[in-house]
Length: 284
Image (cartoon, rainbow, N blue to C red; front, side):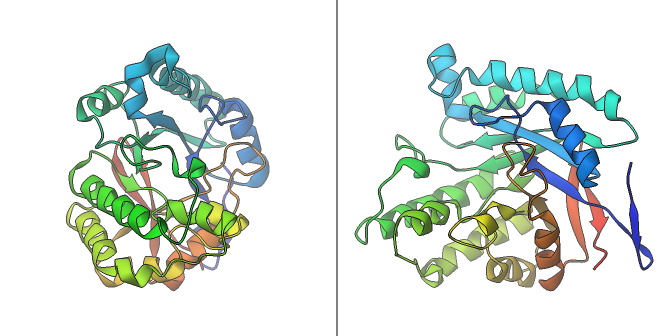
């Protein structure tokens, strides 16, 4: 495994949000991702293929593919590939668990697929509504959509079985991309604080998702101000993820995400092994 020493601290780069070809929108094999990690000097990769839990009910008829089969293949690919890269890349077995509060019985089935290292919880759509990617945004509907979104995130933070909460400001990625509207998140401050307090009380992580740095929003999801607020309230754990869907984007922005964590007062960022947090010292 590749390490660099910066001062007295070992420089370790870990990407905890990576999709392989076993996600409906992924492009690269697990093996190719590991080869890319070696080339880029990334020490740890957690494969977090999509599991939109409500889609389990549709089986092969799901527009995203058979969720259980795809996650099963993701798990087996990680297990088969990990030993091949032993000593070069630490490969961890994760899952991005979408909409865990919509159908709790299906979420339970998803979690039973394997003994995962890491569960990344996300909300991509409100119940009985399309993914935020597909929605049209107007001055009239953005407020109500964001309110409902943060309410579901709060329910997730309070009640779901997970380790880190993904891309807190996910809808903004598309609002900034398709409109000139810049929502004022101060009006959602109370519920965002409630989400953060739920994470803190349950000793869960907040993800710093770096994908937004390379999109029109030009910030991490959430941005530095919200990461700082999480720390002010007592946040202990942050995970850093590129949300890569191919080898090219693996690790993209992760060092910037680590820098943001440091600026906000974190001395460590976090990876998970067997659902237990492991602290990675920040070298900056």
